[in-house]
Image (cartoon, rainbow, N blue to C red; front, side):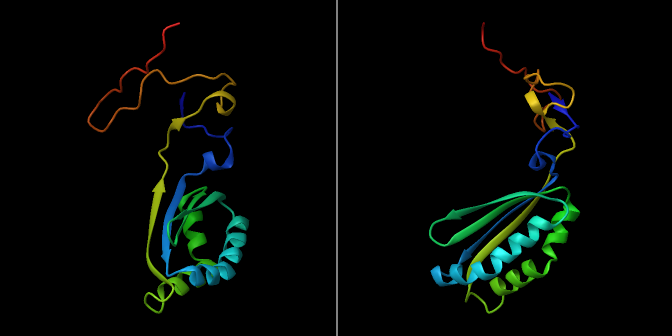
Length: 150
């Protein structure tokens, strides 16, 4: 079901702002030193109003990344201003490539409408799908969702 009411979904589904970022650290020593500030930063982030959920990912050999969801863009940007986040970013970027050799950050906003089904539907508890796919940018209407033959 297409909807703008996400009141029944878990907190991460109510988020409207997403952070995706990664840093390629210099090596194992940098990752070890990172942990001293990182755990404090995560603890602080989880206590902020607007925090919904996050996860961390790893890419060989020394890249650590984060995907984090916040209630809205302001909550995400408030987190970026916190002491432990600022300290971590200064440690990563100061002194050239001593601690890290690269990184990126992307911020995403959720569309006003989306999809729900089953227990997360605001108007009922029935599993159901949408009748048509969301149109692509070059389409006015999306094609019908295929239903398997009964």
